[in-house]
Amino acid sequence: MTEENTTISNYWIISGSPIEKEFVLRRLDCELSFSKTNPDYLIHKAFCLYRKTKWIRNASTKTKSEVSGGGRKPWAQKGRGKARAGSIRSPLWRGGGVCFGPKPMLYNPKLNNREYDHAFRILLVEKQKSIIPISLVDGSKESTLIKTDSSYFGKTKSAKQIVSQILEKNNIKSLDLIGKKNLTIIVSPEEFKLLDGTIFLKGIKNISNLNLVKDNELTLHHILRSNYILITAYSSYNLTRKNMSWKKITR
Image 1 (cartoon, rainbow, N blue to C red):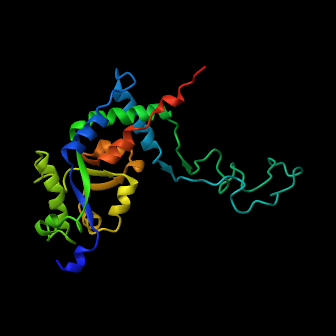
Image 2 (image 1 turned 30 degrees about the vertical axis):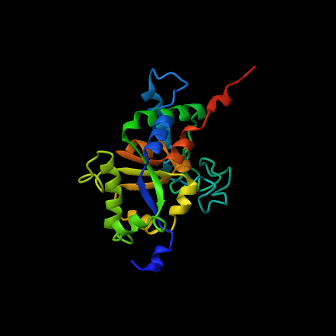
Image 3 (image 1 turned 60 degrees about the vertical axis):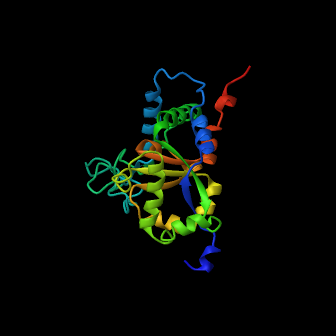
């Protein structure tokens, strides 16, 4: 690696410090201000409604007014002995419009904000054993990392090695995990700006089943499908600081 490359700021992720691990675990292990008698019900309800938002009905039929032609009355109202008709595009005619046919539509089911917030918090608590704290590091300032991981820059193989080192430090065997199991990296929008355009971000794009998500775009689907979640301390604070108590009606 040349000296010119050392001056370029290049961020990637490393395993979190003991202080960051304790902070993340405390944020996720906070006391829940609601009953947990049936937590799976809320998670199932929130996830099913989330899936419905992804449904798109493309089936479409034309009504009488949308079918071309039929502007002239086929025959006179009286005098022919036939049933009266006003248009050849009537739903009773072949080639006419369709009554009550399907139309394209988007499903937008409603879920209470508190219900979604409770389901999100419950899921984070249940996934606590699969959550691994991480932190960002600037490679241009850490000379030790540049010397030990000089082969990292620009290589997807080395990006896998960075992720595997984080998993192994947390006593997780990464041999058959990366590329086969679902991994999700959660960062804050500010941290994503630091990673945006870096070589590390380009390297992990080639790794299958590995997603990098901002905490403000995180959904229940990301958490449910992930076998392991790598999260920064700032993101854990953002995800757990939301307090829905202000929605309670006070009289």
